[in-house]
Length: 112
Length: 113
Image (cartoon, rainbow over all chains, first blue to last red; front, side, top):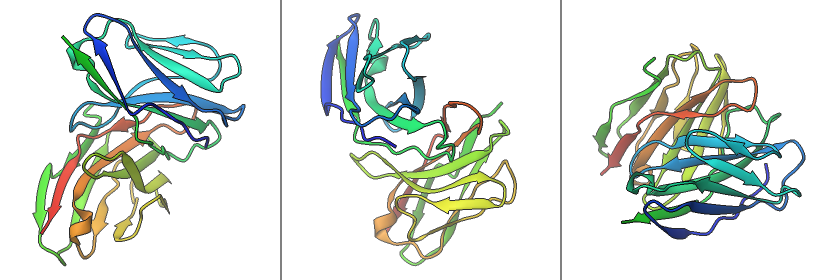
C-alpha cells in the first residue's frame, strides 16, 4: 500500500471550510484513498473514500487530483466537534485483509 | 446493532500477569483487527484475521496472541504483561467484499505497572 504524507497540524475557524491535504505520490491504479478521524480518546471513525472521482457524503467531500498523487478532504462548515486527528490512508481493493496502516495524521484544531 | 464492543474499558496489570482483551462484533464482518495506540502516536496494527480460523501478524505482534474461533469474536491475549504494553487497544471489523470501511470499538485502556 502507498505511503501518505500529511501536515502535522492545521487550524480552522468555526463555520469555515477545513481543507486537509494528503500527498500520495506513489499511489497505484487500484488503490483507494480513505479518510478516518479520531476524536480525543475515541476509536477512529470512517469519513469517506474514493478511487479517482470526487466524492461527497453527509460528513465531507473528497477531492482527488487528476493524476491521483494527492487529495484534499473538505469539511464544508467546521464545528468545534470536528477537532480531531485526521488520517489519510491509501490501500488497494485487492488488499482485502482488514489491514489499515495509520500514519501520524493531521491534528485539526477548530477555533471559535 | 451494537457494532464493535470491547471489554474491559480499563485494566491495570502487574508485570508478568496475563489477561485477555475481548472484542466482539454483531455485523457478520469477515475481517477483524487489533491495534494499539501509545500516547501521542498513531495506531499500529498488532494482529488481524480474515475469517474464522485464520489469523496473521501485523506491525507489532510480539507479546500478543490471537485466535478466531467464531466470526463474532476476536480476543487478544497478553501472556506475560510488560510495562511496554501500556497502551490503548482498539479492535476493528469490516466486510470483505468491496472498498469497505472499518468500524472501531471504543478501546481498552491498559496500564502495566
